[in-house]
Image 1: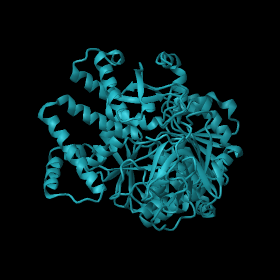
Image 2 (image 1 turned 60 degrees about the vertical axis):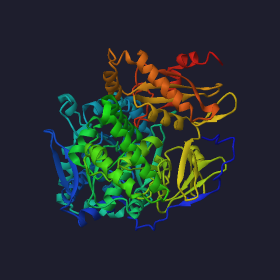
Image 3 (image 1 turned 120 degrees about the vertical axis):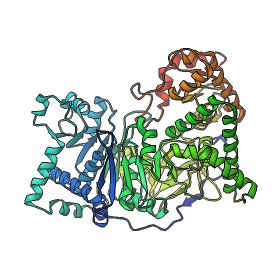
Image 4 (image 1 turned 45 degrees about the horizontal axis):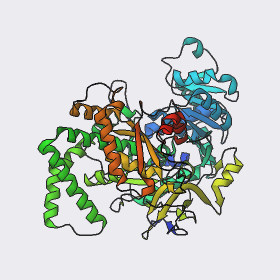
Length: 626
């Protein structure tokens, strides 16, 4: 690691662009959707879990009918161009239909995480000027009823699941059901069959499509204004990569309230693949084996958990099986490294790799459904060690990079040219350059229109001539590949004047110690670095059983064996760090970090300042040598 601020930045001023030619960009998401419906009416568009445990299939034609009914319903309520409809719903096919209906009706979607507390929901609805809200169930409706006096601009609430909504609320004219909305839509279409088509055709590329409120690791969330052109550009640029095909099946579990989830929908409309949609995180591994997808996108935490679970389970079994496992991954990593360096694979190594695949890798791949061609990782830094492990198993993770402010997708690795440890090359039509201080700048079709109602913040982010200042530090190598070194605002400056990039240290620590969950490296204004860590309950349970540790999760943080394991990993970590970066002390927290405690964003990013405030006394106790 380098002291990125104090030292010169080798790639400052260097620019890289997406090398592939662009494909045509649709004028709006509604136009793109109806084009897909017309082209592939009988093909499967979506799969959704049913109450009985099976899966229901939706063709593009059937999806088009449902979306049109809902879009007409919004028109019957009086929705006008660019007026906001807020969606407070978990990832499910109904979220997609609602969003598409808003697009086709000429409105704009305000996304609301289901986990957002009532006060923040009220802020988002008021700040966005949302006129209507679609609430998933009684829980989401309860937040709106609780804050009703603070959201006078909300005229109607449309509820999807009313099973736990009491009768008095159902009688409130402020609340209608999703089927009520669809029924109103059908009534409008009976009298004016082309009502939705006329509105959809009138939507132009610069129109507001989505307001996504950044979850914010500090302060109040900001509303990011993304246009139809932003999303349609993303879909067209992803198609130009040749990364995805119409015959593929995607497993989509990511929050659709987040830009990462939404960009996958744009890609699907452009390309026409099938999406199996289920946002239940505890069902991910089970669903992989059922859906047998060709690809899945996710945040690094998901891949870290899979890696940790497999490694820990194999280590606990020990014996010949563990030795074969380690041997196989050693062979796999050697093959990946030679391929990345453009070196040939000898006949002997090829034969060993075939054995490793039959004995080990095939079983790992089968656990993921057996058909995965690649995963896509984004929203936070992926550990290079974890990426290398998956690549060795024949399950490459294509790491990418983007912000909500760039419509999620800006940079991504390509199949067949996947450089582990980098975030790849820019998308076609996107430029990336490194500023004098190492900050990554992005220009292209995905860059936001503005922050909603925040001209000063917009001016700080959009710095002129179309460039967006990302707030991330990085570098561009001689091949044009981009590497992220840290968040500009997250760089830690020690009292000795040295800068530390905590996210890189944290990702290495996780790879070295699979039982860890979340990690926060602390050193700001201190003479040395320390770390607060939590335990991953699933992986630690297997570790505890293998080690004969008595007691449940509440006793694990103070268990001598677990503590010794964590400290041994810390010592190994420090061997690869510069002197001023080494972690001098580590403490295991009594519980994991949580969204409810304000320590994690809904997309599971750590709110560093909140954690440091919540554990200020514990941190202070580690600096008695200061």
